[in-house]
Amino acid sequence: MKNIKFLYLIFIIILSPSVFSQDFDTLSIVKKGAKLIKVSNQFKFTEGPAADKKGNVFFTDQPNNRIWKYDTKGQLSVFLENAGRSNGLYFDKKGNILSCADEKNQLWSIDKKGNHTVLLDNFEGKLLNGPNDLWQDSNGGIYFTDPFYLREYWTRKTQEIDKKRLYYLPKGSKTAIIMDEDFKQPNGIVGSGDGKFLYVADIGASKTYRYEISGEGKLSNRTLFANMGSDGMTTDAEGNLYLTGRGVTVFDKTGKQIAKIPVPSGWTANICFGGKNRKLLFITASDSVYTLDMHVKGVN
Image 1 (cartoon, one colour):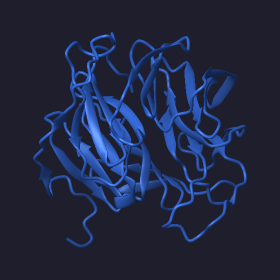
Image 2 (image 1 turned 90 degrees about the horizontal axis):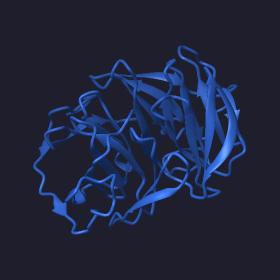
Image 3 (image 1 turned 180 degrees about the vertical axis):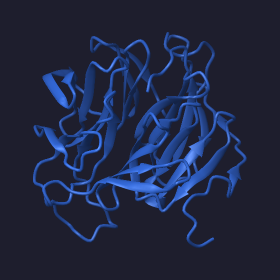
């Protein structure tokens, strides 16, 4: 099996999901009668879920250096080995996976065959701290967070860039632009469905901020949205924001908490909407992944 770059069909896991009895009927955003389902717990640490146009969900098992695929039929398979220690993922309009490839502190574009192209590998000649999560705007530019989490697989032990920043990489450019550096540890990031707002979590300060997107690669009016940080996040078609950490906490567009979804794992790292109708909430949590049928629909 040497030198295999992608593993679409090397093996498919036959799942025996665990169903949890938590009652979600009081939450209007959850489908009536829905139960939290553990799909599998065979991983080491799951992260970065993102759904393609068909609703298939791709996610990472970073310590094992893999990207997995959970398809719309409920089948689980390995998509890519040697995945650059990918963390946060996002699909571009062409169906390529944009990845925070943490192994060498890069941004990647991964095509449908698993071949990757390096989009960015430095800032002013210095190694990035470790791109963590990203979101692409309608212009094709990429907003990404660059905190610092020392990895055992790195040879370096310190930061080359002392600031932990939010950057923007314009489409086709090899030079990132500093958007903000007033963070303790920026992490989760997502844009609103209408493209008007960008949400960025400072997990180190237990805060989540909202920016107005005022033009291509331009942000204004940073405001405190929630007194809670987040590892990863997503939005739905009603403008609600889903934050992760100890389970999933949901806020409406005004910043009011409207739901709490408990997840029986030590840490809930990230989240996205998938499935054929974009109403399946897919949750990565420590060594496990979970699903929950929703009443609301997700957005990219």
